[in-house]
Image 1: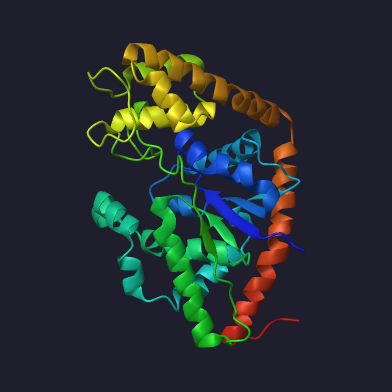
Image 2: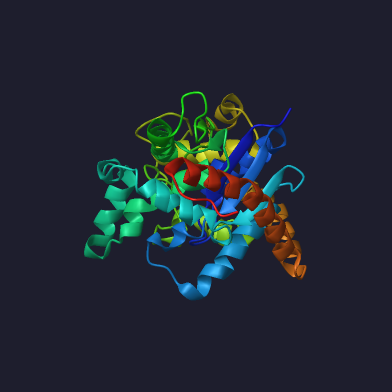
Length: 336
């Protein structure tokens, strides 16, 4: 029996950080043997906001190498670059044509990012949830690992697929499969080191707000020393008045694989001066093997290109028939 299929991806904008790892990639690694996985570097999404053209290809390859360094296993998973599979953009256009405009205008992330960009906001920012839907639907995806903040986009993908099935499919033979979310309960939202009420983000202007996966030990130590805390002695979870405390304890718990009860007992009488060195050590020890593997991968000439080429071929073998199926349902003539 075929394994259920998983699809997910990360944009190659800025450096991958601890939030990307604990909130997404680590989850991919832990579940990958249960599924047939397609993990994509979504470089087409990267240009919905201002970007540096000279860095796009470099950052794309860095993200792909970090997927491997974090433990993505090619026995269970395929890694490829979104723009290398043209079916993504073609299906996105077809889906755009059946997606009501108000569905896109209601997307929370569009509203937030449009405010930041002002008059310079591009149509791509409005339409990128449709491209995200195309990414997912192309692979007849069963499960999509998402954080809480991405659930709305997956719901939109399901709505678009259901609309296309209703308008152009048959009840006994839907054109597109409706995917389900796969949400991790712990660590799904890793918060900023400078503001425990905000998600750790590549777009935050302050590098002190995040631990990047390739940060060297001295930089990690500096960021932990500078991270926002409070003056209360005794460290506890789930206190809404101490969001930074909850965030840092959660990081420590996830990095060491401990339970909340174990961390609570260990840290109940600690001050920050005792706790921060422990967190620093946990961060350095967690990231060192990832960094070592990353440097090994990037030092092997042509290896990463071969991985991405094989991933593209496997992706196209599934994506192209899906695209053909959608075009046939819409009435297009299919070349023979």
